[in-house]
Image (cartoon, rainbow, N blue to C red):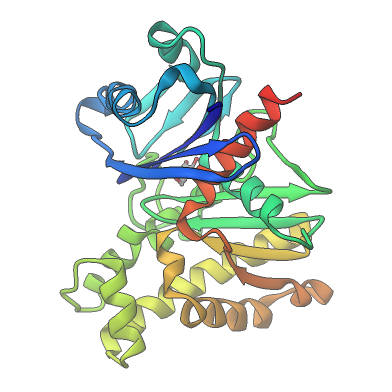
Length: 297
Ligand code: BGC
């Protein structure tokens, strides 16, 4: 049966889904992301896993969501994988020349997936994905804004604290150093907690642990500030929050919303706040939508 594959390459896991051309999910699975040696094994691992899991003769196209700015099919830099200037389609073509491929930024395709899965899609929305990295996808008038250098929506690299922690991108104080899963753990440590994963920090904060609460307060201050900056730039209808950290749910979203509304300019205080409907599958689903749009035209 003809199918399409959506692949979301994250800094920790690679999520893969096989879909019917109509969009129904046939199967999904994950493999760990091997970032050793500048991520040189990642594409091999994906090829091997695909050969194992699906009949590639049936596959009519593969969409990739990758964690970095993309130009055409070239990933300019993926700081959490170790990739620099890698033409994913070109590498893939060597192994599977008959399969068309799309390569897009992970957060951009997640925003696309999220927009397409909503019955009442917001004409303009800004998607934040909080995971190993922090990414963003900006949708204006129903279209993803790519920018001149593929970097529109790189919200994780918005500098929030000039003297902040070193980011994998080489700058200091990027939002990613504060609002990613590793950022949350770093803040927890700074506030005297010895918890070692973001979910545990959120759970402790929900239970009233003061150290964890201070960490989450600092994280949500930074996220709200970043949203204020985005609101006066794009003035969207909605902020949608996805990625593994968003599993903290209303506890996270309500806090950010309250802080944002105190800083918001004029009517931007009415921006809607929502958790991603597709949860941490938004990237995989969006990567499928991107290849579907390419092969079904
Ligand atoms: C990358 C983005 C990506 C985000 C989430 C950031 O470090 O620069 O392109 O969307 O991580 O994976």
